[in-house]
Length: 100
Image 1 (cartoon, one colour):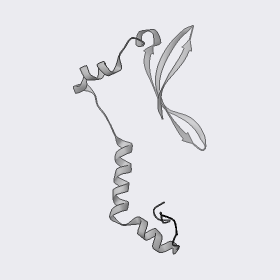
Image 2: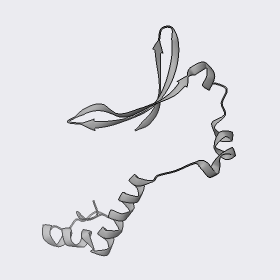
Image 3: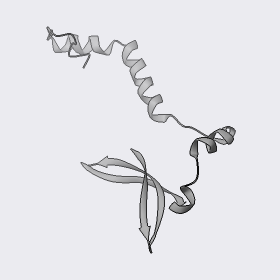
Image 4: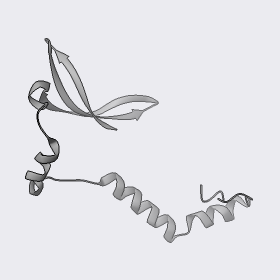
């Protein structure tokens, strides 16, 4: 999860962009990027900043791309059907075991 963190150092607040991940059941910071002092960033309107510099914005959708690719492969090989055939159990509810 990516979020903005506010940290106090020598009486002033500073903002950081961070991402946390779970490692062995514990939350751990994956990376941290310094954004600047809070008082200077309060007046920035991020929507207008992005529209002014839209040509310079670089976006990576790695997580969505990986999930979509895996979903497509599962559909192509009929993974749900294979799981249903191997488990040998038919469910009376709407979804089969392979669908889960």
